[in-house]
Image (cartoon, rainbow, N blue to C red; front, top):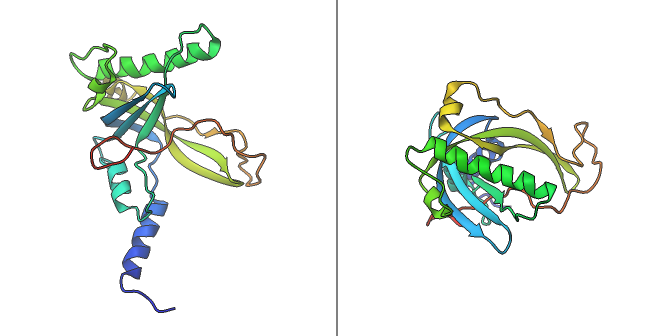
Length: 197
């Protein structure tokens, strides 16, 4: 096979993006966009890190990706409450309220008024923790957004970094326990004009 000219540069970039992982921690973020998918029962919230040494982490990761199907990975999925009185819905309502109150407490003068489009441009603190999943028989570790909190609380030093979480099927010894679930998982996407959802 004949080598092509930009291979060394491409290989260096591929190694960097393949190995660069956001460390578990608490990060001050900015919401870049919100997309309501009412028929599917959730909001997609696109964000990026706004302060500190990892500022712009997800945009940089997106820009450096060589994958033709690349996706913006600064994305959280917030399930919409059904208001059906079920125990599952109580959890959904609690998570939804954590997002709205964290936004209110992080943005002076902002009050949640049932207009999710107003989240764009707002600051929020997000707690990221390492998780383990079994995907197609492979045990994978990565960092995901676990919950929101107020910027003030995040800066107080009292906020705890989430502990490692193993999803069903993940086995720390490396052997697959079972197939991964088909349930919805936070996935990559975006709403900014230059980035696809």
